[in-house]
Length: 306
Image (spheres, rainbow, N blue to C red):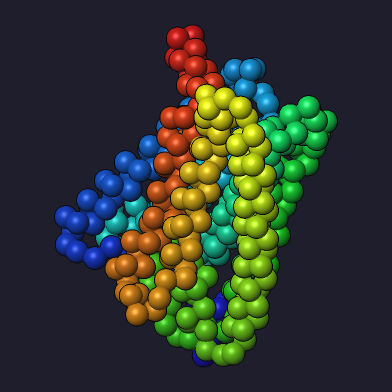
């Protein structure tokens, strides 16, 4: 048994196949990464440039975009570099940073999605109190709370995980450093400390999920009371992008971590990890821009300006 501090590096699970398939993986990840950078970058530029978008909804969207860029930039570049060099190695420090920043951005993103559901609730159910309940200072504090939740959760999990004694084996069955894979290397029952932290995080996640559900129950009730069908569709359309992002985020994460053990395999786990860690940051900008007429008009003005 060796303490984790005596390990100098970890071995990441490579994408299976020949050298040609590894290069194909590099090209595929590069394309997804560039799409994520372009899509999220355009949203950042548009919101910053158009003063009509300086509202609470777009302020929260701006933070969501930053979380998406952070999470995909934490995992994908290293995986691409390893495929290009035909390597599996990630340094100990690099693994610590991957765990820290990935948990930070994922935790903060789900916290922010909960806040965004509250924003939609106030906008639809209590429109006359919108500016009072979601003033600029309140929005900054709420976004800061999402960042703080991410930082605190990431520090707790990272410090606890890398203080565990690990076995001699340093191979992780994942394309990036992930806590469940690191826990498999633990040689003692001290990993139960991390399991308790995971249980605590799961309870907080469940609370956020309940708050989102309660917000949308109230929203649906308010929308159904609108007399015209056109008004119902127009009002509900403002919620569709957020609902789609929440559904994509939760469905991929839940299936990745709560799938039955009998259907688990290294290849399936690898595919699911790509679905919840790589795909959402690239798809989210498309989801928000397709159904958002304000954002599409601002994008047209931005391109027309240049």
